[in-house]
Each structure stands twice: as structure tokens, then as C-alpha cells.
Image 1 (spheres, helix red, strand yellow):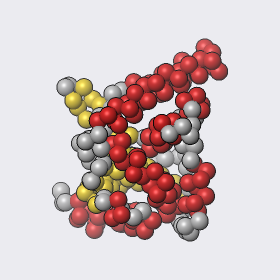
Image 2 (tube, helix red, strand yellow):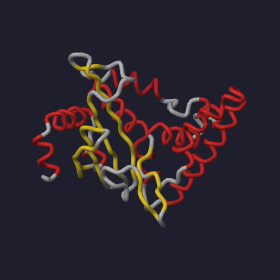
Image 3 (cartoon, rainbow, N blue to C red):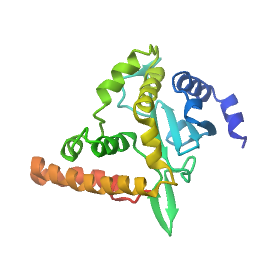
Length: 226
């Protein structure tokens, strides 16, 4: 098996994906460098950018996700994702085993943004509990990203990440910094309190039907994070 630079050279989708995101995200400005490239069963491409403060993982898959409207060629669909990890997050695995227990090692960007928005008073816990998958800065991010002139779907996606970092990257990366455990503990507490608020809201709005939705979400929220 070759090294990750060889993977980039030999994989057309990987090189095109890397080129698209680096055209719109200024990794050098934030001190990031590419530290890993590879694939896994659920993604054709995984790119991990690393230090100084945290890691960021980008993934791309073609023809595996039916939910997106964006399509390539003969109805072949594409999907991309990104997530944040602390410096100990593994390259291609989602969890990190600590004291014999699996901990979530890669973290969902909207929840981290929700934490910053609640912490800074721009959103209430009840507002976030109503739509935890969204950031309240979403409309502004979309508008500013579009103004940067992306022409393809991956470029549009990458430009939104770039705007997000311009708006709050410094504070976001600090939360993930292993040298700032008090900030990480704040996020950990927020996540637990938010989960309780989500469950209360579901019971209030759905009654007996709430349990099925809670069961679906519980693996993500009940698992410890690292």
C-alpha cells in the first residue's frame, strides 16, 4: 500500500477534491497543512488538515448518498462532509478508545457553532434545541460565500467553510485546543445540556412519538467525546 501523497497522485477524485477546497479555503492563513489522504468504505476520499490547534477532516463520496440534489453525469450523486477533531483524533476512524471505552473523536460543525452562538448570546438553548443541525449564522454564511463566486458545487461548499472560518475560526479552533481544557469542558457541558433540551422539546411536541426520534439520535449524543 502506497503513502498518502501517492494516493493523491493516483486518485483523480482526490486530487480534484483537494484542488476545489484549497482554491477557496486559505489553510495557510490558519496554519493548517495536509497531513493525511486516503479512503474508507463510506468515503472515496478523506483529507485531514492538521495543527496548530486542531485537525479538520474533509470527506468526499460519489454514488453512495441518495439525499443530495447535486448530481454528476448520469444521475450519479455526490456528497461531501467535514468535521473537527482535537490533535489526538485518528485519521480515518471516527472514535478514539480511552480506558477501554470508545469516544467520539470527530465533531459536527453546526453543534460547535451553536455552542459559540449560545455562549456569546446570539442564540438561546431553546432555539438551538429546535434545530440543532443548523447554525444561526447559516444565512449569512451562504450569502457571503456566494459572493465569492464559486462555480461548482464543491467550490460552493468549500467557500461556505471559508466564510465560517472568517467569521469565527479563531474562537472555534480554540475550543478544540488540547491546551485549553476549560473551553473543551464548556462544549462538553453544552452538548449534554442541549441533549436534555432536545429530548424535552421532542416530548412536548410529539408526545408518545418522540421516543423513536430520541432513540435515533441517542447514539450520537449519549456517547462520550474526546
